[in-house]
Length: 119
Ligand SMILES: [Zn+2]
Image (cartoon, rainbow, N blue to C red):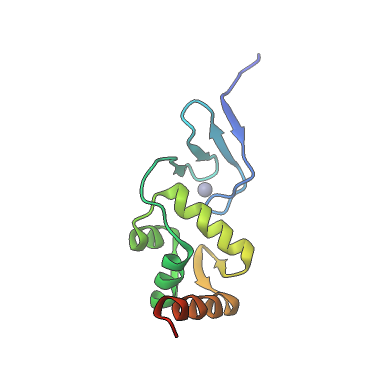
């Protein structure tokens, strides 16, 4: 009864439900959350920067992954990577599926804004 699957579990968490049971499909390269069924599609679309995300969060206060995606027009994979990165840097936090800037994130955003505008 060996049932071979092409799915391998990854170290990433699902952006929708936070489950760690995210598997990668080796054939397509997509990632699938086996908990809620969300598919993180790996596609080459517009990538998103930390600054854009911080800007959207600064404006809205709190946003869930879908809202953030709409605001930044980013693909799942690129947005997810940057969001993970920012979370690791302590710039944002995820509370019950809603992302918001931390104090450090707000300082970081103001600094970056200063650089953009040259003050
Ligand atoms: Zn999920």
